[in-house]
Image (cartoon, rainbow, N blue to C red; front, side, top):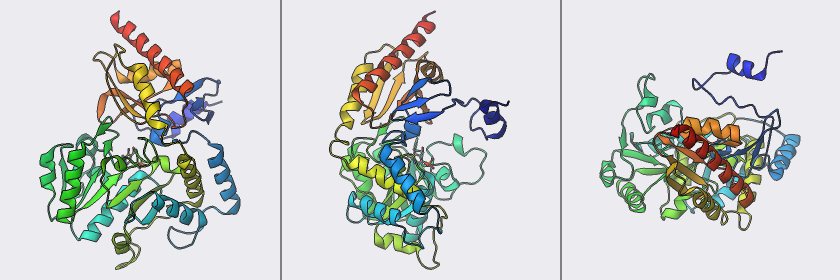
Length: 401
Ligand SMILES: Cc1ncc(COP(=O)(O)O)c(C=O)c1O
């Protein structure tokens, strides 16, 4: 019989020459299980998706009960679907008053596509400012605002009028002009290797956007829903977006995203012509029900408050290891810089053998990622730390030979 592994390589499009090709039979909480019953601690959460853990019972209940009522009914925006309206109400309750209109989509890329389009139509301008080492998605518009040339190669012309600036460089602020439709940024760059925006820089960007009438798009696709210890990372910086984009951790493991703006801004896509952004599956009722349940878990007293200490526990447990040069940590979003001579790919492969799943970053090739489900407890963190240390020790030893 053909193995699943063979079928994977034969029939699924591959996105890299050497995918992990790890076969998972079941996932629960912070653990993944292989068909052979091997238990692996998930230190990635599907890249910041499974914030409430794998198959949280409340999310599973919400999905099951929604499936018994209805699944897809109609393209987004025409029919009143209870999971969508309840989710939008709950989401806006966590946001500044002006962010009161939610457009539900399927993914982070689609949220950013919608946000870029919205900013251009609302301002009547075309200029877009983005930043080095940023990642906003892989569709054509998002690729135009990606933080490095390499990923654009081979794909022809990108969106016009996009300027890529240095992140955290005050000179970048002056590039925002009255021709700028929007500035798109992550307040903490995920794929850049967990690089936090400096408060002064982010404030200056916000002020310059307000002065020039450019709209500030904050992409919280990776940082949202508690990942940094706040519901949204921008809350820590005293700035607010004009358009907020969300996905990943939003759906408790189900696909959903959103771009959120004021009533007035969002109004421009509804007319002249109508249907300025169309999505068939956006805000799928089953995903919306899962998102609502997931948000209720994150809202539980003490959930967000516990996250910084969990991240710091990782830092304490790993700092000082001779293979680690530096750690950047914001809540449960960590980048561990390895000393030269130890390759991230080797760490990931050896880590898997030892029972931990880690990951690399698109724009930071000497650090590995720690972003476990936010539900991880102290004992699981300590177990993960021991396995990380065991992996690093093994790599250091083999390098010494
Ligand atoms: C900050 C950020 N924005 C957008 C995206 C794109 O999201 P998706 O893969 O759901 O399209 C990602 C994905 O990694 C991301 O990290």
